[in-house]
Length: 320
Image (cartoon, rainbow, N blue to C red; front, side, top):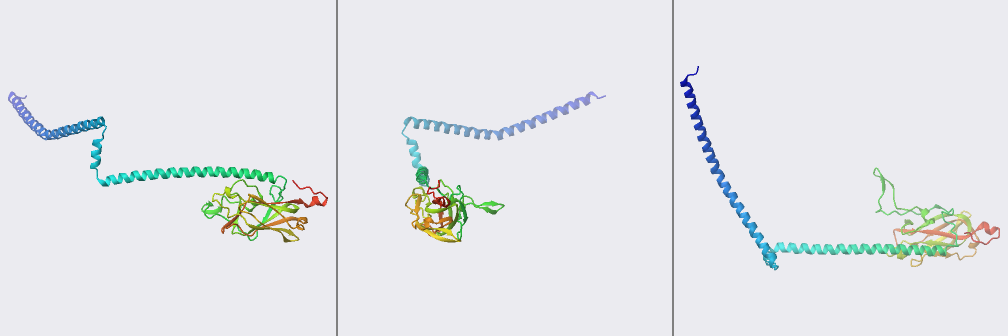
């Protein structure tokens, strides 16, 4: 058994430990308070200062709004460095210039769109008039009627070097937006629908739908009013028309396409003896153009006349 004396000594030791622990806790609290008090003071003064500055700013802004004189802002503005003012002025100036340029570009784009619409309308009207004029004249070179482009001797097609190519795994396989020589005997409706060849001289060999006695030919190109560049220097100028007789070509006529004339220009065969000779194959020989050294464009070539077989049976009616 535990004696009374032992129990008393245990309680005495426990009280001594409690006193020691209280002394240590008191000392820790005192040191902690001493270190926290300066921090609270700093925070208090910072909060008070911020509140004072905020109150001052609110009062000052209220005063400026009520006065409507802008004196505060004007005084502040005068205190800004001159370099900052120069940067602001140059920035505002650049913004004004950019805005004016954007407005100018927008106006030019609208004008260009209006011009394109106007040119397309004029081109349609011109086509309508030409259709009425050519209503009673058959085109024996037309692909729709049975005409064929046989060859383009000594003539190379023209491809725009800046046009994108169609490639297959990096290998060029085609050139888009370029027409074949067949376009010469096909209808067209807008600028660019033509066959272009390199240089100012080129030939197209055409087999007509029927053997005919040729009395007229027609050559077509867009007018100056429909050109985006304001000129048609790629239009043919001087050209020959030849007909094949017994494996050789004979001259039917030499003509000049006028760059200031109608889009479709018709030319009469003047040699009367040739108007009595039937031709099944003809050659369009472009001798020169109106100044374009790179390429020449042919929009359409037509051949008019009378079918030879009809003449044999004594009929002078033109084929429709």
